Image: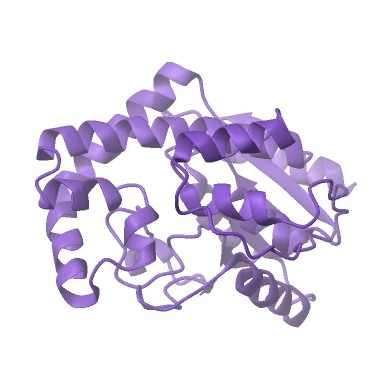
Length: 284
């Protein structure tokens, strides 16, 4: 059995993954693009050793921040694990929709044309993408994805087909609660030493690509450069996290047949029991 837990940040995906892995004696495969990297811990809300409760985790902490790792690499690595452990129960957990899609679907990578977009602003690139597909879900601040979208030789790629027997489980909550959880998580990151983590990473690796694009890191870098204040960086992290949560919902609702469960923050066991009942019913 393969269970895939998706949803926005702060809804309890990690907690649910551990509970389900313990019940079904499953291993866990990470599907968070930033948690692939070692030493990016606080800003990614990465699970620690104690929280793992002895459960095997894969594709977590496998690359240094200055090493390259693409969605194509993730696709190969995830499928290798899915095939290697096909006789075991597997829980995939994470909020990076493209990683989940690439691993579980017949997701093909289109060739990229060699075009220089360095003279265009993000706003101009975004408008050009809209001209191609008004319904795209690209982030205007993610320049790399905007440029790659425009460089694709094929703009009309057929919808990929699911390759595995997977149950997609989504955790959700109402928007005010979600935003409150996101804000609280950001505050805790600062209390736990996010600024020091980013400073140490910069001193050790420099402004490597992952630090320049990951939420929680790119904003602190701006502050350290004196472009914004630390308080402005904090508020920007909250804002960018909320925007990212919206994009996550859009991706999962449009790309996958997700069964959604509302997170009960007062008694998470109730949420867990609802998911278990769904899995049991679906297997009958």
